[in-house]
Image (cartoon, rainbow, N blue to C red; front, side, top):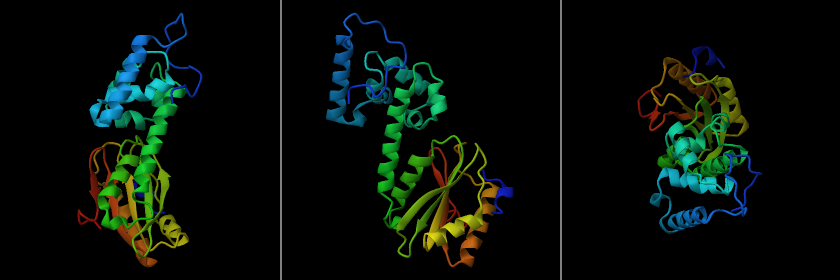
Length: 253
């Protein structure tokens, strides 16, 4: 929720083994049963794709590189028990990940590489494109980057005269239910980018995208600032865990 008082303005490990203790191996090699399991799992993934594997096996594939000589299935299950699903594990804050026994820098790095790749892939489908004609891709991008955050984030998507997305910027971060927003700064940045229109987006970590009174008031103030400068505010989207809310569609803008 936005507070009303703020609306005025490979195979080898990447790191040394620092994860869960590895059982002593007299030969220093990966036990044959683990090597066979990993080989079979990789083969299933390559032949059937992600849909052929449940979440815990997808996590195993990521953990193989970080923990090269240990059964990682228990840790994969522990991560899912803690965070809920594959997406939530990948998006979890580093501090929460490292609080789990067996998760060190190498594991965090593997998970965050996948998260960063997902964000880049989703962004590539919207940046420099006419996003009003591909609304689904825009929503997918917003959910990918924001739906699993545990604190609020406020983003502005800047568009040119053809409604092509020319910039996507984070304007502010906040707490679990509050993010400071300054309407004049949003409008000022639009002018700096020579934008003609914008879409504002923020997330509700609670999962419920229902707007608060402060959200509505902030939107109206940004709209007024845009109108004064001949800018168009196309929409304000609130991202929840599994669904979103459009101010435009709800008649709030």
